[in-house]
Length: 335
Length: 221
Image (cartoon, rainbow over all chains, first blue to last red; front, side, top):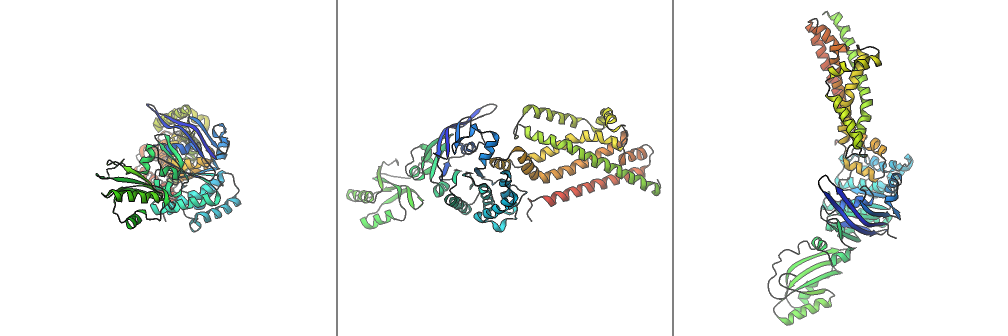
């Protein structure tokens, strides 16, 4: 049974002059232990979707089922109790400015009605996990963005949740800090088994941490699957747009015979093109390349212009296919 | 006026003015605080939107705020008699002072509470905080600095009102200024009351700002 199940979820915002369909028939299953990325351009409905998961936004229709419980059937009190199991972290951290680090972490447990002694003990553990023990008496205004997000993560972990929802949690951070926050989230997922849902507009976030990905476009899910599936063979237009963001651009491909090599998870430490040139004694022209490394495997594509000689052309194609790469003929317009 | 007469007169005036200001401010906050919280909660984007309650409270506050204080004092004389037993003197003046100040205070508090980052309130909701918990543990503590600044401004305004009340039977420095300085042309008395009122205002302002700065954790050390 999936831990989070969204069924035919829709959300409509009624304004005075117009209604906006923020979400249209969303169906999604997220299993225990997944790190699930939900990616889309801004305005695609990501933030509304994540707020529907903990009912900060009530869906217009459809259901959200968490751990077997349909959220629409819960009373206000039951919903508040459930939210202690579904923590959330935010783009702008949303810490209490008038409380220090300890006070902010304590807040989540005060809400949950925990005893003072228990709160103090748990804070020490959490500070250890997020590595902020030496900053425990600082106020948010004295911390960097990355440190503030660590406090938010500690606060999110305080009530031993099953799920952590991340709403653009790294979008306000620089690349180095982003990496360290993502590493922390991965660590939490591995060691504590907490399911993580990540809302983002950054491909790199999904690549580096997610096991599964859903692509949301204009309020609807365009594509859902494991990160490997979706990234190697994107089917929908929205997915292609996100993954081969530059592929539509003019690559200056001219005449002659060209091939497209598709990398679908081959070992990234093998230098295919270099060994092709060395072993076959041929030259190729790299017209376009967009590959990315996901956990030691290469995904993406490359377009090569081949030499005039037909024998050499066949040799190159044979060599690459033999290496397990998918090779396709390309017409001169790049498709 | 001779100094030996002036000093006790002024000391009495200061005492009465402080008495009216402090007691009126306290009562104005007792009425204004719940009013402000209701306004914030029931506002269209509040935690418990309620169009009817919000519109009624909003209108009541606006009506009372638009009546000039001097006129309000005259309007509520029957009520003042009912509560204080008489319509003149320092204690009686507290009644119209509270009625005039409560809506003003409510607006000050409302604007302070609305300054709280909606993201922090959303974070509290995402943790399962109830509305009372959000008010007591998030909104009020986060708005603390702004609330203290607001209280400073409010008590200054009430001090000004209390002096105005001297015109129609209120007590304190305002009454001294009018009965000696205006009615009996004793300019020296008038000037001394003005100087004392300015000093009182400065003291209130200085104390308020000191407390608000001292308690604000947003400032880097």
